[in-house]
Image (cartoon, rainbow, N blue to C red):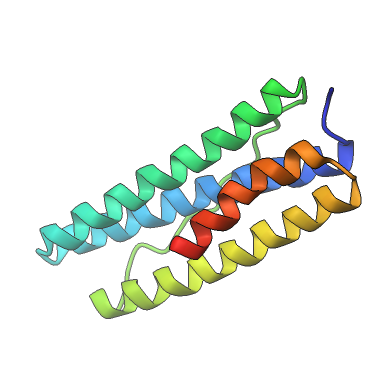
Length: 131
């Protein structure tokens, strides 16, 4: 059964947010590489790949539910940072923002009485607690 249209739109916006997260963390990775911090660069690249995987989980979920995936433009992330400490502060703030987005998305699923989506979103809620 397809996802409610309001929830489908919200998930599509969230796919964009996850892809932006991937893009942001890749930018942070390249910044760390540019200041000769290969360990931080590697860690941020892994985070970028993880966010891409999250986006694809949402894509797959909509497709499994016979719902339409609509990709939106991805905003350019910052390319310069003050320091590696700035990168870490911004990473924490971004993860906190994503947690709010996922909680809001869960609220849309509750309002739509979409129990399957609520169950799927529990995985992401747990993931954000770990982050």
